[in-house]
Image (cartoon, rainbow, N blue to C red; front, side):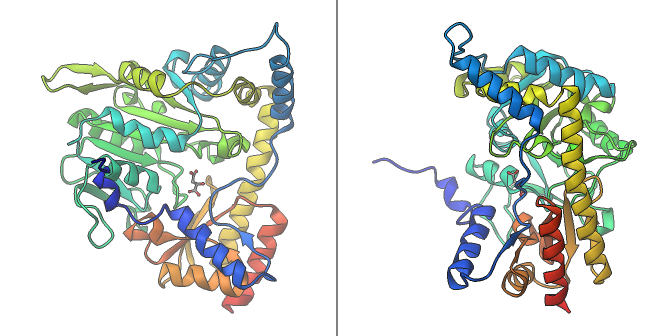
Length: 407
Ligand code: MLT
């Protein structure tokens, strides 16, 4: 008899954004005349930078010619892209990362979801709350928890991120092995200072723990004092894996390209207490289960680092950041406490009422889609997340509708 992985039965019925999409579709079916403005899922709306489009066209033409055609590429990514990433995203910021420590992939969602496979079943996992649900669900699927009770999974160590700690969680009071951190944060938009990240790195070093650092939103950092990479912190190479993405940086959500950095010094321990390099383990996993991002897409990603690509990407992100500022100031004018929206594309709003109730209010009275904070964890119970990923005109219109609906 074929049996299922019963850990799947511990999960919520559906993934957060699938659940929201279903509710929105049902509302739209009942109200076909209502135009909707989507500020929910963090999906970009503006076209790809011209430099990326030109590179895509050129690479596609190469694929049409026998002399320049390419079949399977290296699973970890082409050297041209890995070298550009190492030089521009890390060495230019004073962080040491070598090209062969970079694993190019189809998304930070896949990588942050898959990475847990290389760790023992019984590692103690620290999960911030609120949090990107992928970190939670993939560890539940792997059997690292009991079934949820009151919205939390026994087996995780939860790290509350609230207004009281500026949405940067305190170090755990009980031992943990695997720590998920995301800055600029999804969903709160909070950023971590150098000193705060240094404290986490020190914790990991003292406790032989590992930090999984999700930096998918680093391109939104404009404050020169905020670190873009965990590797800007001395000692982090031994205790941290970092995830990056071209999705939000350069509008690649539909094209798919991201990367993960596994430094060669990064270790975990086997059953006999022997240190094992995670670089070797992830190489084994990645080359077994992944066949590389397509050549044209990697050329498009490389174009992000050209002078014109850098300028275009900067302008793209500036547009979303301007939206984020507008959203935050509109909600603050209406009397709501907000965080994020500065150095981040998300605004986290304390609604002082049930998150789904507020979501329904914005949907039904304003025709605006947001994300209910409870979908990111218990600490999001009274919050919603508004995403800046839309055009300035749509954001303006959404805010006018919301202001009317709430007054
Ligand atoms: C989000 O809205 O949280 C993100 O778009 C999800 C993702 O990047 O997978």
